[in-house]
Image (cartoon, rainbow, N blue to C red; front, top):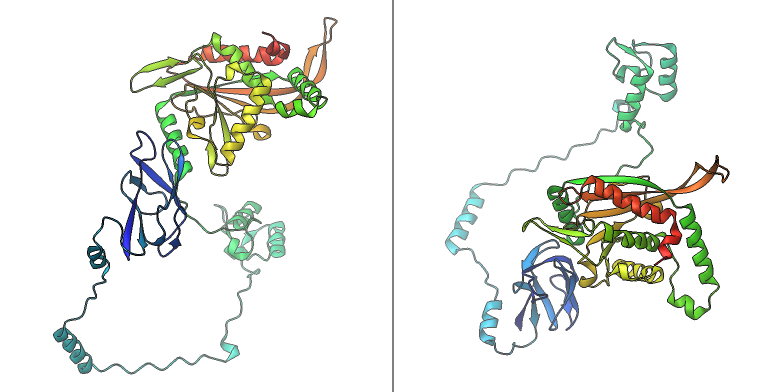
Length: 442
């Protein structure tokens, strides 16, 4: 038998270490060549490690969440025979188990001491009492206790089976309904707790993608002076146009429908953002605060925050400004599916210059999204709601009409973007959303 040490290989240029996010084997497992051993996460991607040999796992590098250096031991596998280029005798010597024995003279002393001190007699087992009269009865509420309380409070306590003597009264010593409410809230042991089930405390180790998210969010809030601006948009006409475009898609033949993805609000919002960015280049920028350099990007590489089972991921639409509505819709779906299935490439999860985050129908009334550092802005559309509004009636007056409204939030890095610029940018986006025909104009 010989031992093969599988060291963590070089899994990317410039990568010095990787985090163990999950083990697929444990000590004692028998594995075959090319079986998956562990998932390792770097700053760029999660990589699956496969065993180069068959054998028995005898040692692993650590627990999930541990970070190990490139080139260090990941797993040790016991294989049949000797390994090429290794000294079999040295391997066998390394595998011998040394058994520690007790010195004979010490053993004699132990035996002699045991004989000199006889074992005490075992204590007789206690005899359980069977007299039922000695068993205390369950405590019953003492409803006749002398406590200051109104008749209504006394009746309520009686109905609930509460001993007024156990209720802490107010400062004047009189028990009131509020005191009963407090007793009900804090005395769950007596059956007065809220209806929610009690769960045991649990500790969850922050590892993998969740740790990356935590580190990035902490760095963003620590380094970036955020401010958020929120504006309301009337998207009634935009939603009408979107419905018309999707209705036209249904009338097309199957081949053409397979090329075009059904439109959601996201492609329309992205188109409005990309049309507005050239007037506000400070929004589409990255700030290297170590070098103190701001890079204003010409192309819009738009990050789309997507919720997955493992946490928040941000796949990137490359050159979003060069794509039409149907291309954007198709790319959004492709990237979101890849992120949720864990198949997104590292190149698809990095390099964004601006991020769009949306919770869809859970978007709330307003949000204050956290900037995806080193970007300087993040945009968050909120959910669409219907409200009555005053609109022109075409005769110089106004009428009340039901309209579809949506708030747009933008958080910016105040070191790079002034409040006036952020507000002006969103106002221009609003104009396009409220006059959607302009989105289709060249």
